[in-house]
Figure 1 (cartoon, rainbow, N blue to C red):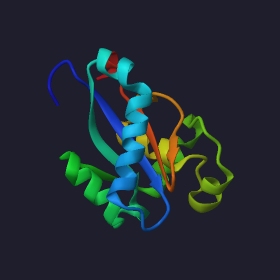
Figure 2: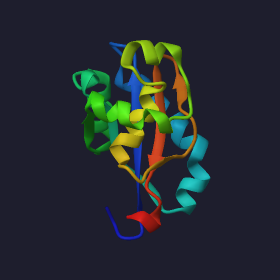
Figure 3: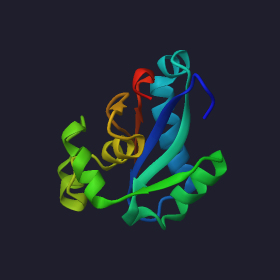
Length: 139
């Protein structure tokens, strides 16, 4: 990461079998929703985070590779540790992964303990995406 840039992580949650195009659509929608403030703060997308249980999803792997950024797999315990900081409360996500928002929890866990969400997750079809960053004064 270049000096002056702030770490920004995209958390991804999805149904099984999503395509790289579906993941990219959710990423693009989340970035577009925060584009002006993100660019103004010198943030660039640093990595994609997803639950370890989704680590073999070809669509997520391919989307990270296409963007040329690392894919980080988040342990279940780390997802659960960030759950109190999520903004969205999905009963489906809670039943499936024991967190209120898979994308938000993954983004927060991937960005670290000082991170904060840039907004609630964005859902595009079968994929959810949330963005988290670490404020510049805590890096």
